[in-house]
Image 1: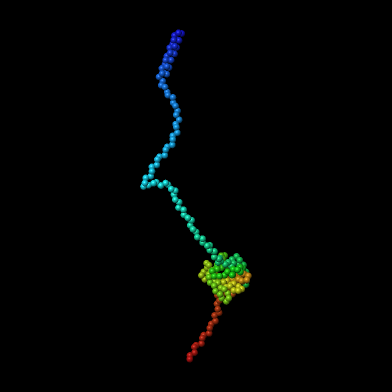
Image 2: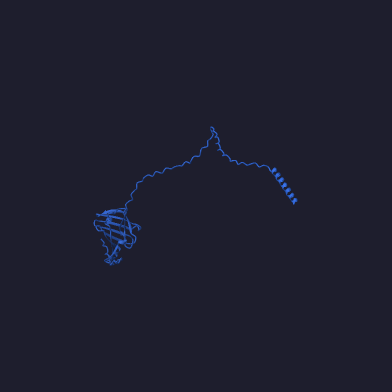
Length: 230
């Protein structure tokens, strides 16, 4: 028992000596003081060197010049009225009413009496023709007076050079004659009422002469007497 206590006492003394040596040899650590950085003052502007005489001075950038083009001057042009319509429509093919008369086919239609007052050189007459779907047109390019009646004539549009339309306007009636290679039509218009009668002259001719080729009777002639001698 006394020996054990002796060992413990020796151990305690040894530990105390060792701890004292360690405390003596440990260097002192200085206290760290945290410093807050002071704000940095703004940098002073750099001195500008004075411009030397004769030295080129850099021009400050200027905005690009915009070339403004003025609006062109538009001269006011007076509006010219369109020329009057030169087309005179007499009748169309749908208005033609067939009528049988003396073994012939006639056609009746109606014309506006005001159209007869528009007849003049340069006017284009339009009328319906039996057996033709499209209307026929002819431009009046010539006129003259005969026997108290006014006469106009003109070529048929789209026809042969010899195709013509002739208009003879009297006091009571207006006679229109269409002469083409295929047919000849006669149209008689009542100036007061506008009632119109269309006749195919070819049919009228065939009715008057059923035999187109007429052979005259051949009669032998008596011989002439011999000439007398004087």
